[in-house]
Length: 197
Image (cartoon, rainbow, N blue to C red; front, side, top):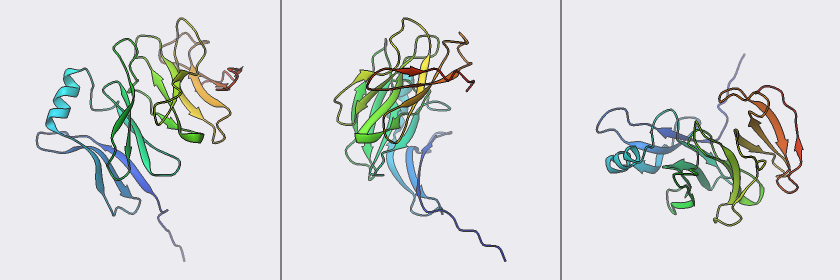
């Protein structure tokens, strides 16, 4: 006899409106398919203003990420880092990105210990760096190495918050080929694993 049980959990997804009249935005549902509900809806006006600002709602963008306690979602929209409560209330901008240093919509933000959120800034074709900020907007600081060029992105903090894995093109000098490194957010000490990834 064989049995299979769906693991219990809640998924957060980006629903993309493909045709006029469809609703898009952040949607959550149980892993068994029940309990689906909208957390943040994109109106046609939101889609139009986002498109006018150069934000493409499609393969890149939003990247919803759960807080450790499961009560909030962090995501990127129109060059900003945003947080919303899981019930859809309390939407707020944590970091407002400018044209010179937008919050990247190419990589998901990541929650870490003590409500830190790690995220990537910059855009394709320019330098990218990664930063952290507390979800109340305090403590904003660059964590990646202070360099005048290159791509250091996709930060993934350890559960303890003492080290962050990330990708860099320091070795490859390529906009699409990276190696992995680790950095301490406290001391800035870097461990150069430099295996492809």
